[in-house]
Image: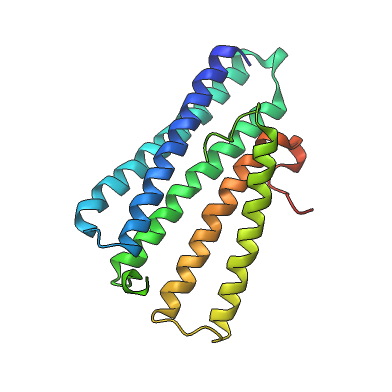
Length: 192
């Protein structure tokens, strides 16, 4: 791939991450804080639409580039970018799910990534992957405890959904990170 194509795709992926982080902050503030849902909803959904458009742009650029440069195509890199784009796009969807928990009236207020996604920072990517996997396991334990009625919480269904969506966000971040350091056939398979 040409440097121009890579720069353009890197910029779009960076923008997707920034937008995903913004959506996460908005949705968590709605669920855990006193944020007015009506003031946030339009921003949240328009940001998700922007992420979706960037996702389509990345795919489109990758397809055009592969057609133009078919003889010198770096297929593993193309697949890595496709995977990263897909995983980052899914983060926005789970942020909307977290917002929807708050929108149903469930609130936890009274119960009181981007810099490492660089080929130059492999040790930070490894740390993110290990940390994400560990947090995922901890969340699974909490979900199991909730399902087995071993935790007493005010909103057990909403809490279970929240943990599930949070875990999916974390794992999509981890999956996007694997595209940086793993061989193409191992992307998304951190524990095998």
